[in-house]
Image (cartoon, rainbow, N blue to C red):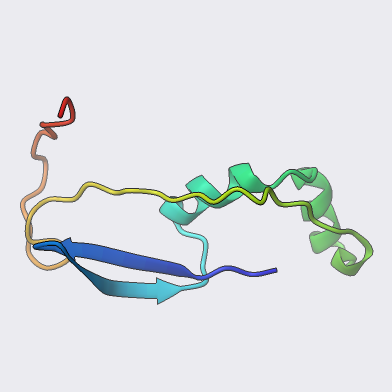
Length: 89
């Protein structure tokens, strides 16, 4: 099992890939970790002790995604500290 994270940006209705990788950053972790149905502590113990092949992992078949709201101009130069509004829509 593996995963790839693809960071997309919506520009006037057109999707653009701004990054892709297989690391676990904050947004990826927020959706991947809750899908793990196995005992996470047991998985980590096996990993730390070089015995990962002696266990298995159960992952939910459900899909997940994360949506991130960013300031205009991101990922280039952008304003910081602005209030988020419009969520009631």
